[in-house]
Length: 472
Ligand code: FRU
Image (cartoon, rainbow, N blue to C red; front, side, top):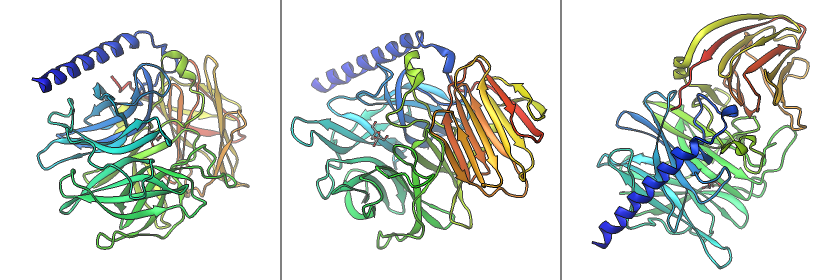
């Protein structure tokens, strides 16, 4: 009887929360709302969580605080899709109780249940004032989740560090494996565990650790095989900027290496590299479906202004990208082909030097021109708001994105023989793909659709597609 009572109260609080969200949505100011990116329906979101495929549908969860457009006790919000391009909001999957529901992942277990593995974070009265342990929640239908009664399943890090979070689980052979972000005396590290049943976990190895210059904490680790190598993807905190690199407060990047499931040793063969060079990209996570490695990230960064916060929401996800490794051991990140399903009318624009063209709020641009000359495009709101200039100078060999806020991002790029930029514009965002090797994700809070001006002396050709609304 006690048990059924607590379940019933849970149901009530879930229903109240969904009713609250529906009501709060009515007060959202739509001026910056994204039309094909997953974003906070109301309130605040950060990291993508539990990116997975279950019974014919993709599932994506996210760190969610529905009650205010700033960070608060974490819930897991939930969206689902059949094609990774069109998304549907589902009821909030996890609600914090004594534990806040921090980031984690999802796997489909042997009983065909969708299992969420997440960090339960408890705040305490004594120094260091928090603990982090790993928790499970189960679902038979991909919509309703029940927290495991035996939580936590993994109590603490081998060195007792309270920073012990963001489990990313996967299956290999007879075991489940998980990587967890942690730290050791101020050096970020990633821990590897395995389990026969997701309940009993055995510590295997320190998969990677900073030797002092790679940050104090490694958040949101992910680990996978790609084109014959292994990729340790993670979000280190506390890297110092080096020239043009590591310009965000925290970074997201990867180390390529070799790995053995016999020794559990990861041997890096390349240095840590950023995966996206824009202003707003963090806590990337992946899943593999039908042999394709898919990535999504928080289209945001800690400790910056979210101009949409005063509109009743804050935060979004990038579009889904697919990954491959090139022969220089670089991750190549491209928009998934499914994004083409959002294309509507094609417009071909020949933009002469000094000309402008007015596009809608949601549009994909394919820009071509001569790689031997300067290219400069200004992206601004047709009704004002923020703007950004994207440029290429062959003499310097760098692509630059400048929001005129003193925080310029630039990166060296060697274009292939034919120059093409693929640019996804949504109401308040730009994702620029210079091939798959240099990508910038940056929020730009334009108003009233996009005006694009050619500020270079050469004529640029733009093919553009209006993109249909795809988040409901
Ligand atoms: C990364 C992160 C995670 C944590 C979550 C809390 O952005 O700090 O390490 O689980 O956000 O919302």
